[in-house]
Image (cartoon, rainbow, N blue to C red; front, side):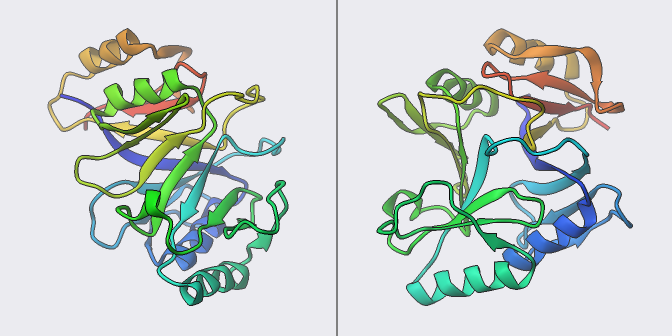
Length: 243
């Protein structure tokens, strides 16, 4: 049985603090994680992925390979989202955006970039508050994740790709070339999960057949309950062992 997208994971210097920030911005409930241990926030309707915050002390070098695009229903709604993010510890940043562009570029307290998109964006019209996880990546990696998750391609043009769950919700997009070289461990990564009783080894083999590689180190971050893998662009992702 195919893996499901269980979580989008952030490596964070203070996981519980970053969980509170994103909980405040998104309105998602915080679950677990005392002090600086791993924490998570859960979507209000209980469907789709959660967001996990895991300990990590690696310094940030350059822009992340992935960031959230948050949607807006109106100009007032966009201003409220920006104000809420700033109130919880976010800040404005300059990544080369032009003054005439309607989106607002911010960073969370750990320096992770995200955008608050202006209302009327047709590409994100059928999503949700997290309209997209926008990634720097090749067409090949878009095709890989479409097959890995069994999510259909909803955009495939000029080497730009996007996928979306058959149930709707957040899109995952890849911008195509040029793709910046990867430096160090990504701060954002996917965590996949299998239903109880699923054939874990068969699923890992399927992902390898699609173009993934398995870490020579074996387990993920020293956690025996998941394996670390890499997609065709070298991005880390994890596969949970069925419990």
